[in-house]
Amino acid sequence: MRLLSWNVNGIRSFIAQCSNSQEDSWIDSLDADILCLQEFKLARARIDRSLAIINHYESYHSCAKKRPGYSGVSIYAKDPYRPLDVHDMLFTDNMMLNEQGPFTASDLDSEGRTIIAEFPLFTLFNIYFPNDPSEDRFKYKMAFNQAVQKRIQHEIAQGKQILLVGDLNICFAEIDHCDPKQSCKDNNLESFADHPARKWLYSFFQETGMVDVYRWFHPDQKNAFTCWNTLINARESNYGTRIDYIICTKGLLPWIKSCDIHPDIMGSDHCPVSVEFHKTHPETGQSILSFMSRDEGPVPTLCASNWPEFQQHSGSILRFLKPKSSTVVVNAVSIPHITPQNTRKQKNLLDFFTEKSPPNPISITNESLEETFDFSIPKFNDDHVKDTWKKLMTPKEAPKCYHDEECRAFTVNKSGPNKGRKFYLCPRPVGPGYKDNGKMEDGVQVSKRQRILNEYRCDFFQWANASTKRRLPTS
Image (cartoon, rainbow, N blue to C red; front, side):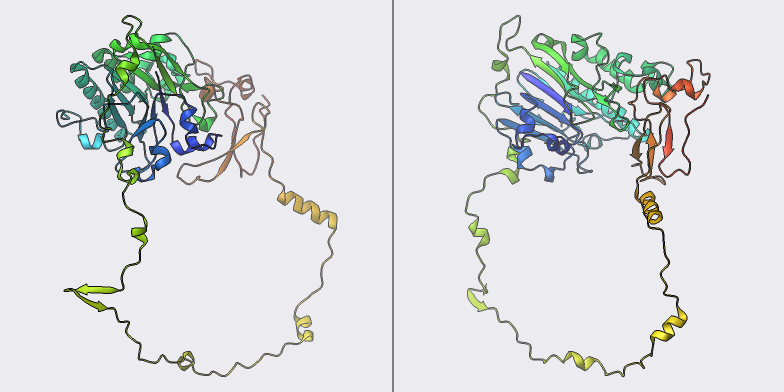
């Protein structure tokens, strides 16, 4: 059995990149028995039959309630690996939220970040954890993290095995980051482990006893990243972070054969993470199929096949198209509709206008025009005119960066006074130390000439409409 987790950053954009024209090709290409997606980014009303009802799969979706098309997580379970029950909330009636700051359980369950599926072998948590671009969102993030931990500990206390997958939006260790020193500078940290989110994840591992499955199989693997900033062309140089995880309780480890990341699968700024289960338990010889098969019974309520819009209705569609009677029945007496006749005669449109006398014409002769205006056509040099128009119509050449390479053009998309403006940057991909390009490690500034020696992006910048070009450094 193969489980795959992926932040697709919008399911529609990924499907559009699938070359096969068949509707189910996108899910077949991932070759997963259980598929967990984050950032599905579709409102409930926009999940059509092609996404909800797929051959051999049951689908389950959790959508944002207040911001349609934001966030969203989904699970696709292939026959015969189908869940017993599915929930899209962290908190149930038997589990109340306490000490989570200003956020209620409804607040934490309103963004479509959680979907929990109960299988016979384990309980699967597919979660898209919040990011922290602002102080308010940081508070929300930490409250959400604590809520997830509380729910998982609640399940563990009942003797269940847990499998947590998704985008945690946390880079745990230095080995999981392309440039940990720069990260410390950006966040004003003395050490990489000081970030509050990393401290929480460390305590989560300690208090739950759960294991980062990828690091269990690949403890020393470097450059194993799952997310890249596509705006700065970071994937080309593998300048990324590992923030997508598969985490499990230790009781599941004997069942797991391998865990891998798949940077070769494109379609998002993240790549998938997968875990492969043994067909039979290495020690007991029990088949995983015997554990994971669901007996015949009701499909979980949250399954998309239960949605009213996908239910099969009885009766012919012709009854909706049959014209209604033109009579109204009142007290069993049929009274035909009578269209009142318009007895008033409409006035002629000309009645509303009075005849006006035309203005006196102005006499204009050719002689009077020639006396007033000079209609002589100036003579131009044809070559001069062609050169002038050529200069006006020829696109402006891109400047060259400090590597003496032609720059790439970018456009400002962020709201503000510069939105829509174009600018030029070095065409090379970003890499370690690119933000500090041109400085020694001790902070001493060096000449721009030395920056050319760096194999990654230099700090050249120029607005497209700048009056003068930046010249290459001469010293």
